Image 1 (cartoon, rainbow, N blue to C red):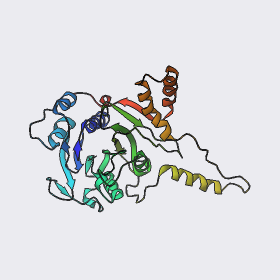
Image 2 (cartoon, rainbow, N blue to C red):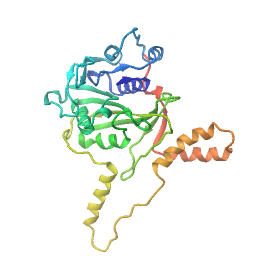
Image 3 (cartoon, one colour):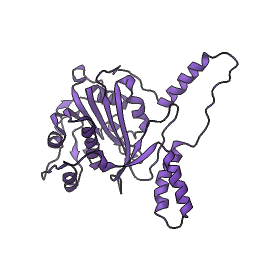
Image 4 (spheres, rainbow, N blue to C red):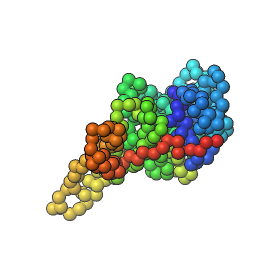
Length: 300
């Protein structure tokens, strides 16, 4: 459970878009996993030798008024002791303005309860931040996370009105560019593969001031929900009308992979210029958009 430059830039984005963090809780006490010089360049924060945890950073740079950490044991000095496999105590519901989950919930067997706890901790007008393993993390934890989880979880029906979702590589040029993941059209999926390098999914979700049902017990995959709704609607149509058929189109996985292939082609000399132009044209059709991670927030 630690903070790399990807997480720093996610917090920059959240502060830029929604303001200071206020009452803050971390799921697992977060450690520094950032080069001190790079951290200073992007936030102005002076890391002190031997400083392990990020509470002072949250207070000085991101405006946290209180900073708690939640864990199932006291071994790292957590201030709130609770097992995320279990239902969140009622006293903690809506107690925080910012909830930070950087590499924690993928280690919880009952991940659905852990995710519900994350958004129940969040007060109206507050923000939930996640940074979790996506592709190529086999063996790291119990789960690797898909964008679909957040598309289905953070909806207006569950009280969230804004969602910013990105994918980022962890090695090589991983922190230089992010891929913005846009919510797919109803009935479609966004399946992505950014290559062989480990990939993280970065999520910032804002809870509405006036919320709907925070306690909805079950989350369904969004494209299936759409198909069920269409099928239910179709039952009311007069007999004799054929059922809806879903055409197979080029999968989002194939389209997203063109982004990665396009980089490799552009760096190679044995492909023709026409092939590069064709790939450049096709890469515009995917649900992913490459953006500069540094644009997420300003320097101090």
